[in-house]
Length: 203
Image (cartoon, rainbow, N blue to C red; front, top):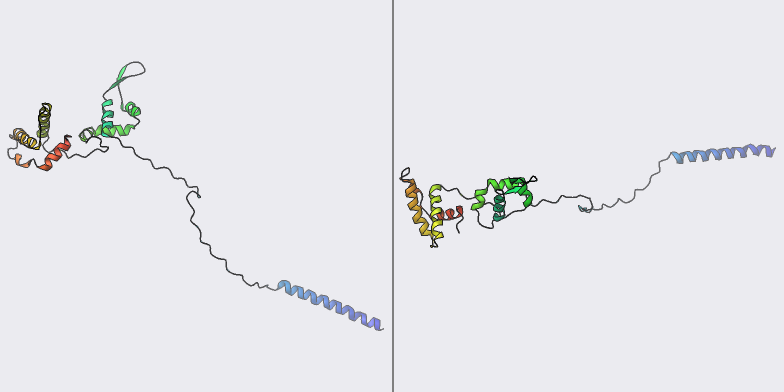
């Protein structure tokens, strides 16, 4: 009888143990596990990357080539020449042909053609077209320059006083009828003489 009485008690303890174990496992599965936060990650300063590492390619800047006054005058003189074409006929050279021979662009040669007078008046060896102030008394200066060429061809010395003396004489002869009082407007000063030499390329 004792054995029969103890059997149910033992069975109940096992069932109670299993039930308590299941309840504990359920609690563990449903409970929130709190994890202690670790240290914050350190901020790392980003190093600037070079352009080479970014594979960025820059186009090389085009450099504009400059030419001397003598080279420009040579190019302009070539436009007055002639050549033989494929049929053996003599034809005038064109801008395209001259530009190809000298290794320049057609646009550049056309620009020189428009600035021919300024290029001729520029100083020797200069690479930029000098802006020369236009003469106020063109007729007088033209005759004065022609007279200067005649005297220089004879080998006579010519100085600043000669230019002023001849300039006044030519000025009075050219503008005496139309402008009797205008001779005082041209003072033949140091500034006029300097600009006159620049305009006519007299050194």
